[in-house]
Image (cartoon, rainbow, N blue to C red):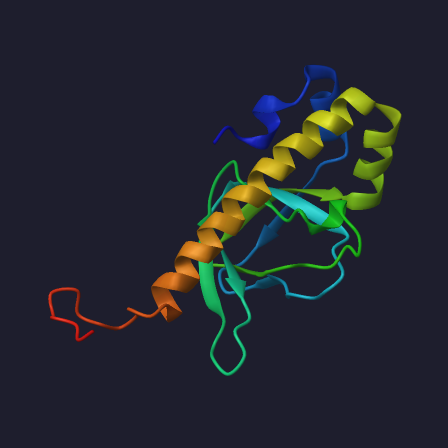
Length: 154
């Protein structure tokens, strides 16, 4: 999947990058919590971030690991603008951070850019949904914890 910045129109990408602020997170930092207010997003420059999903009665399930070039956070774009997953830095992480209000204003001012950004984020959402579904089936599906070589009774 191409990185976010690679698929944006050049002029819009340049305007977006004018809004970027460098931000770092030490390993182990909780970047955001599921259900919290989504008012910014990040593009990871270095390091790794785990996305996790709250599972009632169990510890959070890691559904995907993000790395350099990946978009961290998409919930800022859609109402109710609350995080659908949680995120934690696995290693020290360097990012470019973007204020959601400013980026939404940029999308309103430049509809071509806004459409390209929205399409790319929709692709990210589809990928993450598929990844989360697969991971949850691995962890909690009917065959979770069973030896694949063991005969199963019907």
